Length: 86
Image (tube, rainbow, N blue to C red; front, side, top):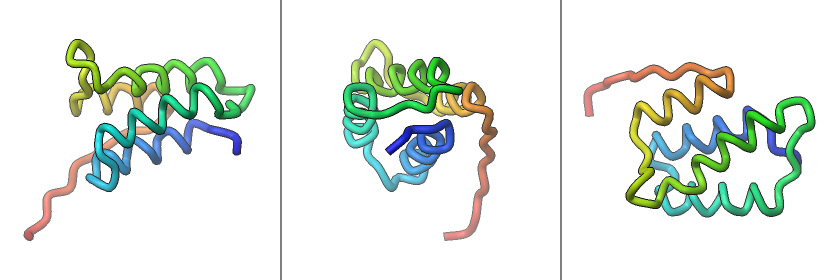
């Protein structure tokens, strides 16, 4: 499976929607770096973002909302927040 900007953005979105835990996102990123096939066109950007996600479980790095916004922007996406009644 080729990993694209969309693939990575989808993983970040799943994390932000609490569909993936931080540990699951980090595991995905680590596997993607080792075993994933990056699309040639965006390989440098995609691999840089995936590498950043792969260290998000290290206290020194972490993963804040702002980090996610920045990573999504690097991939060519924007994020927005929607607040709805529970």
